[in-house]
Length: 225
Image (cartoon, rainbow, N blue to C red; front, side):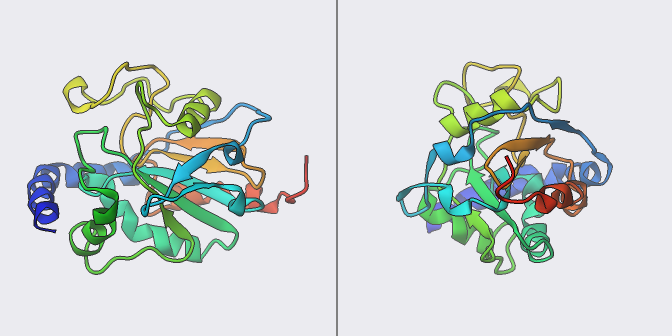
C-alpha cells in the first residue's frame, strides 16, 4: 500500500500541470472514425480480470459496449467521474476498462492495487465502479506484446489522429501508424461484438461526445445480421 501511494503522489504531481489542458480538450475535441465491416468479434478473445481469472466476453452478447484503455495517474483520469453516470442513463450499454502502463508509465500499480488508487487518489473521493462499469486486468494495447483484442480493434478501426505521443513517453516498440495514441482512447462495440466507432481520448465532454453514438446501436436488434 505504501508503494501505491508514493507512486500516486509522484505521478499525480506530474499530471497536475496538464490536467487543465486535458479538460479543455474534453470540451473541444470531436475526433472519431467509423470502423470497417468485419465478421470477427470481440467475443473471440479472452481477457484477464483484476483477480487473475481468464474470461471471454461472451457474457456481454446483446449489449452495446464502450471499451476504454485507462490509467490512474493521468489528466484524462478525471473521465472516470463520468463513467458511472454515463452508464446509468444509458440502459443496455456497458463500459469495459483496460488499464495500461504504456503511456508515460501512468498505470504503475499491480492489478490488486488499481481499485484502491482510483478510490483514494485519482479520481479519489471514494470512487468505485458501478455494476455496469467493469475494470479488467492490465494489458498492453500497442507494441510487440499488444493484446490480440487490441490488435483486432486497431486493424478494424482507422486511427483518429496522425500524431502519436512523444517518443520518450511511449513505453513500447515497435510504433505503428494504427497505434492507440494515449490513455482513454475508446471503441464503441455493437450488440454483436463488432467495432463500430473509434474515439480520440479527448473526445469526451462529460461523455456526451461519445453518448450520442449509443442510440443507433441500441436501436439495432440483437438478432440482426
